[in-house]
Image (tube, rainbow, N blue to C red; front, side, top):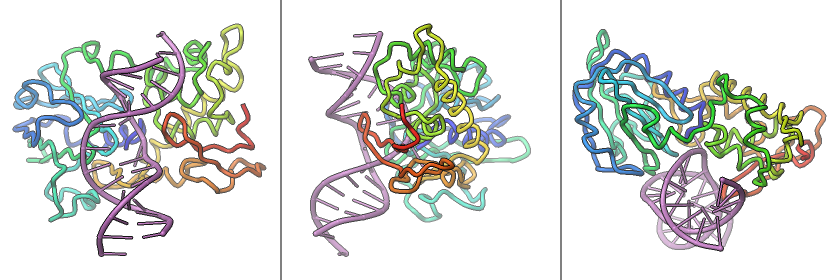
Length: 294
DNA sequence: CCACTAACCTGTAGGC
DNA sequence: TGCCTACAGGTTAGTG
C-alpha cells in the first residue's frame, strides 16, 4: 500500500494521539505477520510511554521511554485506526459491525488529556511486519537503507555514485531501497516522467564518464523530491484501501501524471503522447513513449 | 556483487 | 449469479 508519502501521512495522523501516551496492554491476535513478532514483543511495549513517532523510508518508528524503538512496516495493506468512533470516517474495511478478521494487533493506550484510546493494526495480506530494537544499526531492516530522499544526504551526486556502471533499468534502481529509501512503484513512475527519462534506460547511462550526474539525473533528483513533497502535502495517495489514521483519504492520486493512466493523453505541455503500460520485474510501469526518451 | 524470479497472502475487478 | 484470471502501494530468499 504505502510508499514514503503515505507512511508520512500515517505518522502525522498518529503522532498527536500516541506521543505522551502510555501503553497499557498489547494484544497480538496471531504470532506473525510477514515475519514472526520478536520474542517478548508485547511485554516490551506494555508499561512504556511513547516519546515520539518517527519515520525512516517506509518504516514507522515509535520511540519508547525504555529507549527501545517499535518498528512497523505496513507492507501493501497495513493500516492503523482507532477503535470506538474517535473519528468521523472509519476505514472502509471496518465499518461498525464489519468483520475484524484482519485486526492483528490491538494496543490499549492512555493519553494524558485524551484519555483511553484503542489503536488497531489491520493488514489483510499480512505483508507488513514489526520489530523491536535498541539501536537503529541493530535492525536488519534499517541498516542497509539508502539516504532519505527528502533529507540533506540525497542529491544527484549521491545518486550518480550509486548508479555508476549499473546496467539495471533506472526504474528498478529507484525501487532499490539501498539506493534511495522510500520510493515505491507509483512514485518511481511519476518521478521518471517528471525528468523525461525512459524507465527502461540503464541507470548507468545517467552518469557521465567523470562520475558526475548528467543533466537528466539532476532533473530526476528534483523529480523525486518534488513528487514526494507534493504527495505528502496532499495527504498521500488513496488507491483501493489506503487511509490515513484518521480514516480520511489522501488526494494525490488525482495528480498522477502517468500511474494507472494507460491510454490517457500525456499531461506534459505540448506533448502528443499517450501513456503506455509495460511490466518490469513483474510490476507495472507507466510512462509516455514520446516525452520520455532516454 | 548484480539481475531476475518466485514467494509470501488476501481481496477485488473484469471477462465470460 | 458464479467461476476464472489477472493484478494490487512491498520485501526477502533463492537462483544463475
